Picture 1 (cartoon, one colour):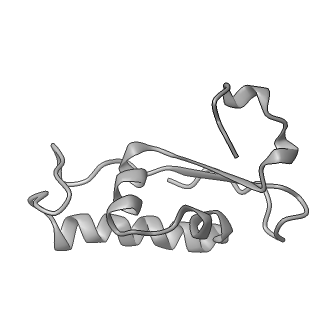
Picture 2 (cartoon, one colour):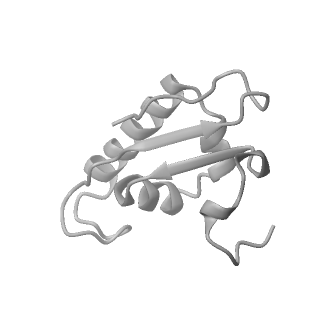
Length: 97
């Protein structure tokens, strides 16, 4: 799908899912090579566990920011997942922080 026009011009029927993440969540997810479509399929409990795992990784495995350069030990992490009503059975989950 080409995204040459503003996303607001697409109807929600075009998308099966959408993940919005703060940079603190996004950078950790990308660094640990977690696929975004897998993030979109997680339950609320799984999202919460994933964010906690990311936080622990930063604090325990990379406190100096050598693997993932950053100004502080860890950043805030928030994720919002939206999935179309007929695409999975866990829809429109709340913000997880």
